[in-house]
Length: 427
Image (tube, rainbow, N blue to C red):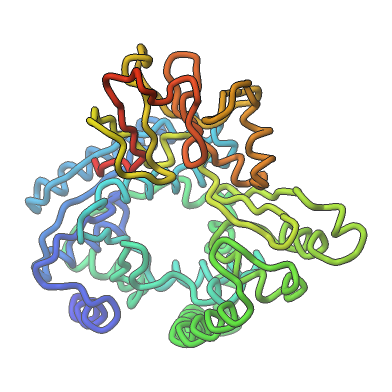
């Protein structure tokens, strides 16, 4: 099995020999075998274990096993604890989805700003299950390609072997592993596919798993050419990452590709198609919005508009840089100047709230931020993303649009404060 994985790493993943690889290590058969194979191949390893605290003592027992395993093979280990049930309730999602999100959020945090990757223990049987699961959800071509050998910082070196190969490998080494008791419960759809549907397909064709994986490989190898063609069509039709002109919204296939990977379901796509039509119902849908877990789409006058659904300042990755300067020089939408002596409280940044008002630069009276943005013909999606800088209870800057006239620089100003909105530094 080691030779097969080595060949797969060279051919499909392209992992450098001296690379630092973080191994997602649950202690189960798949991740245990992955750790041993990569160690055998000479890679520098660092194990990551998630304790989701979902199975009581069993979760703690898994952690203890992983700690001993890493000690035995001299592999550094990091453990992260999650209150998964609480997070699931807060986010309004299933426990299974919350665990997945928390796991990958941590993985991205670990590898942020590095060239390292995360190795996951998905194998050929997992690939077959994923394809069937995607088919049952009405997937497009990307879903038919299944899991990628390397994608978004995650590598899957075991996609070239099956579950039986892994168990035989561990047995040959006399290496124990832990078993998740929930894997035999027929509650999760994936478990039912593994326990019921796969055996049924194998009764019809003993090579069902291999052939399902072959189908994934065929689609995956064709996908770059398909994506290239879609990109050319988007360019020809004026479709951008953030904007989908309504005149093309009747093209369901193009709309589906525009939304690919953004978390919208088929029902929402059909609603977008109907709302984008030139009929009365369509024209009456201006301003309608659809939300996925990660994105928002707005039906504007001439196009569907797409933006990430991150409406808290913590998710914007922005910071305000403060600097005392001698005069006003550099200008721009992300820069504003103020009389420093008038600002007597810490400056903070937050999203716009209902009822927010300020005195726009050059004006005397107060104006609601929402009215100011409407006058500027800012759409609802952009309004939802608007941020303000505050000093105490006052808004001093509607970032990207206008500063507050009360705090402007005048002939009487002795100290000038320059504020610059910039990406937050990497942690």
